[in-house]
Image (cartoon, rainbow, N blue to C red; front, top):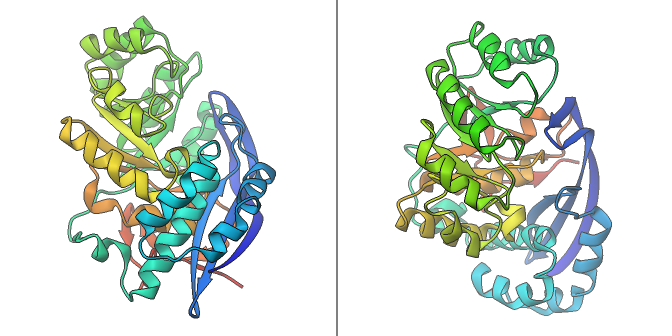
Length: 337
């Protein structure tokens, strides 16, 4: 296999703000694996919260270039097991590499990944569209600019309930709220009571990632389901979230790619938990990979490419929340010229 590493700055349509970060441009790393005339693509964005940069991901991959380029792609799972010990401290780089290996494997075998996994795409969940933190007036503008059946609203301000009340005046769409670790125990419980009548479906990561004791209390008293995000990073976290959250949001970059994500999804389902897969603000390369998992999911947040002013890839497309698959095999992703 031939390894090529590229980086891009993805311009956003709007400044994207959550409780602990704000950006106008999203740097992203694209990994390309080429074999027998086929190219597989994988992606991981830089992320200050988790401490991964384009430079650190590139260095981690360059350190094992020889291993990657001499490996045989008998299966993505075997390849992941081979490279994971060398990239265990950089799951973002591991994700981009694993995604590319999965994409290449599907293309070499002439099938979309979901078909190789025995999945049926007749019934798949709609993706939400994210409204980042802003003034209430600007959040309403963003909502009107993108009519959608399902929104994820980023919260973590002193007027969170007021934001939802105002947005509710302008749409009948279902809301999900994501506080990104910004709330406390009593605040979360009280907010759940006020948000439920406003057609909010669930609360994502209301409290600090390490406050599992507080989450126990919230889990007992919240009137809305609770989904873990920052509290659920890797495979070992799924069991820890059981009894503290009603579901988990699996993110490919955090866990190290499609290969471990599929295991996390199955484990959560065995524990009776709801499963969501979320995205970063990434291109259609990463979004097309997420799409392969859709038949396994209860919820999905894969709007990253919709938030971009300019994309760098083609692949799956999304129309009013519904995902339409590419005719290209693997994940369906191809880099644009």
